[in-house]
Amino acid sequence: MDLTSYAELAVLLINSPDRLTCLEGLRALLEEGGRYRPGCRITRGDLDALRDLREELIVIFETAAGGDEDGVVDRLNSLLIQHPVQPQISGHDGERWHMHLTEGGRMADQYAVGAVMGLATLVTDLGVDRLGLCQAAPCRRAFLDTSSNRSRRYCSERCASRANVAAYRARRKGNGQ
Image 1 (cartoon, rainbow, N blue to C red):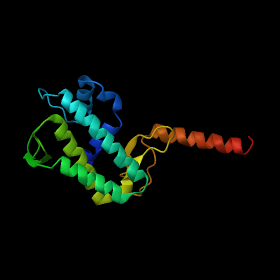
Image 2 (cartoon, rainbow, N blue to C red; image 1 turned 180 degrees about the vertical axis):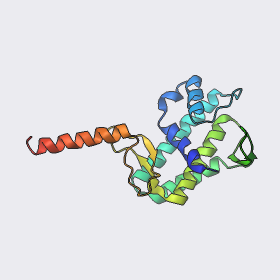
Image 3 (cartoon, rainbow, N blue to C red; image 1 turned 120 degrees about the vertical axis):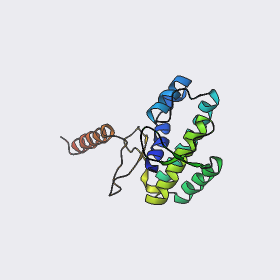
Image 4 (cartoon, helix red, strand yellow; image 1 turned 135 degrees about the horizontal axis):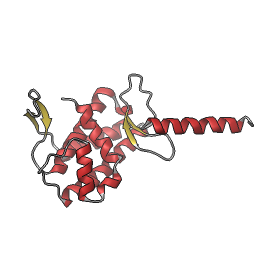
């Protein structure tokens, strides 16, 4: 079971506030995260629950950015209690038997379990410092640092380039050029 892909669900949710305004937007978010199956029922309750989860996940990433490991772990443990993991053996799309997290319940519960368990596993395997917020002002989008040397500071190449250009211009201006 690749729990990093589950942790990416948390990042996708944090970085998609515009998709949490209506059920069609939520469906698009679920499709992008590979969590939507044709015929599954999505309700206003799912939308509200994922908005609430998004706010809690933002606090976790902000707490991690502040270097408060205990705070991150406390918040993740709280979410693990709220969203208990129910693993199931699954086989689909011609794949071999493999593990999935919570296949039952409403869509928001399934999404929450995956996102929270993925983050919890990533934190315990790789460390709290792998949860990042983009350092390119004013971006602050979330990302997972899965680099081998823990060096990622930006959510995308676009933000990295923009920050590097801004730093270059600031240096040039400081040197009177």
